[in-house]
Image 1 (cartoon, rainbow over the protein chains, first blue to last red):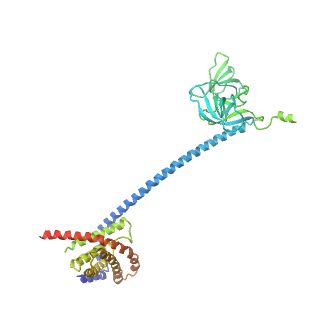
Image 2: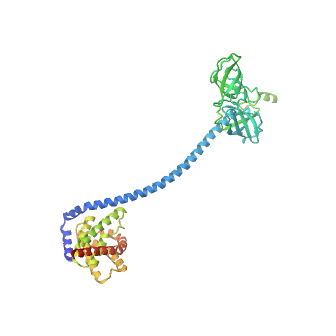
Image 3: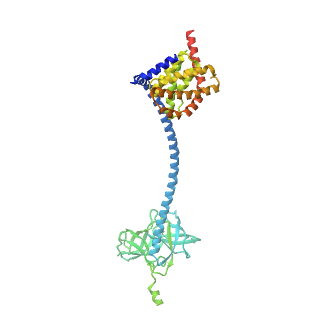
Length: 277
Length: 169
């Protein structure tokens, strides 16, 4: 039987030159072959997808960790950039006002009172004693005055506090007045007292320090005219100004220690030069 | 003795082999289940007619699955039954070492037979180099598969024979 089959198979190979029998067998097997192949590939695809999904989950977790770290770094960088910009802005004031001896300070707290407007600062940069009553300024303008000192910490009375009074002059009309803090609980503002009725302030006009009160140096911006009231029967006009600095966002300020002995541009007084000659 | 069971087993073996090959993207390390069935036929049935017929059928199906000219794997299967049947009279393949030996020798012989048949009938000479790289993995796999598969195949055969006897009885 075995030999017979050997001979038959040999003849089949020899004489199936057209591969008709091979084609027929292949055709008969093809559906089963295709089904099994598909099944195997499906299992393999499922396995590969599962493995891929597992790695995707791990990768996702890793990427989320990285994103968290990078977000933290980005926030720190943005914070540093903002601080850098603020300090640069602050230094501009030092460059513009070389006639003043300034000492930098950090704002660490703000008054939670709705009426009293006070800042707390830490004086940690620069030399020179800080005393009560010294002016506190920011690049945008006057902030207030030192109310009390406790070691390296000080409390600043803002110009919007009702206890604050600053001798001021309107930039264009040169009319003088006293800026007294309004103490309003919904905005930072100050009222101009003793402004003559004859003066017509323009909305947006800047209000500057006169320097005559012996506390605030001359020429610092206190704010700008915000509201001009209706003429009253008295001799004075009611006007409200708003400070250009925003006490709610202030982070760094300067304490004015006193005059530096120089002009604002850094040149020496002509008088001193003459004396030397 | 049933001819149908080895043919069905052979078909399952070929399907299983193809499935494993596709599922795990195997090439060299794919087990040759059809050869396991043919070896089992030779050992369990010797030179019985049913063994030759079943082996030829398995060979024919292998040709269909593999895409080789019809007759190549028929010849390989029939020769395997002849050779293994000769050995079955002299060696006891019931023990584990005997089955390991049968798996290893069966794999080597089946591959050599394939090379020889292709060379003689198709004039194919390059197949020798291709088969060379298969020797080690196929032999190792068959040495593993034969001891595992034979008891299962024996059980199945016994089960089918018993049913037939009961049916005849």
